[in-house]
Length: 323
Ligand SMILES: Cc1cc2nc3c(=O)[nH]c(=O)nc-3n(C[C@H](O)[C@H](O)[C@H](O)COP(=O)(O)OP(=O)(O)OC[C@H]3O[C@@H](n4cnc5c(N)ncnc54)[C@H](O)[C@@H]3O)c2cc1C
Image (cartoon, rainbow, N blue to C red; front, side):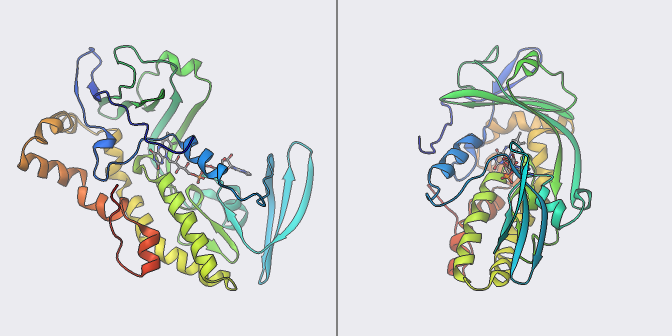
């Protein structure tokens, strides 16, 4: 199925432990009408349009990477067969996530580039509808230093995100898959070294709180491909141009993560009060302006809804993308 907007129709709720609730503001209310999707939607869509001549090897991990002026030698270990082979490539792209192996083999220890935000996260899929909600209803429970987010979809079970110090609900123990991790950023001065380049979380994990990991990955990959086509005989120039063009946007998401984190987990009751007032404030012009200022609507338009590839290719300032 092609990618589609899974945003539910039901009103999102801000809920409390005592069971009370009030209407809340959801991500799909943000400027630019962002779509609600699952990460797997993007993976499936990307997989379905791969050209036939692209070879995919599963259960295969890189164990050594050595490069010279003309190419990169990579030893690949097949974990199911227990065999290894060394092959030569023009360019190696490390898209193996936070704590990337390509990263540690070429750029050094992870600790050098990781910035810990001091929050733990647990995320999992919930089968059915959480008690007190109607099917397809999103909800947020905010308390200082902890939160629970129920992300709802119109045609899929909800997913739940807990940020630490909350009681872990029973469903977490019976979930098929569970992500439990610390919230980390990756900050690197350079994303490429010779003919090895890192992309997305391996290079610039902006944290889940920025909500820009997948988008920056798609744009970063498209831009990389475009610039490699533009400099077919000069990988170095392509990588320099790519990094220079993308850097301002990624730096913005990285720098904004502390503020974005407050969307997910607030620091104090005053912030909770403001969040509760947001739906009411948005009804008035002044209130809407205050909300826009706090939500940083101008920055969203400039950095998050922008056509980065178009801007780079036209040599112009980015234009906001509107659907
Ligand atoms: C709970 C949560 C919510 C999020 N919400 C959003 C959101 O709303 N919007 C958004 O844009 N982003 C969101 N993100 C961030 C987004 O998921 C990531 O930025 C994105 O998935 C990064 O893509 P990636 O390809 O770099 O890494 P990953 O998605 O982590 O993929 C890396 C791949 O590399 C493979 N791999 C790892 N090591 C090796 C190895 N040695 N050899 C071979 N393969 C290897 C892994 O198996 C995996 O398939 C969220 C993240 C989390 C954790």
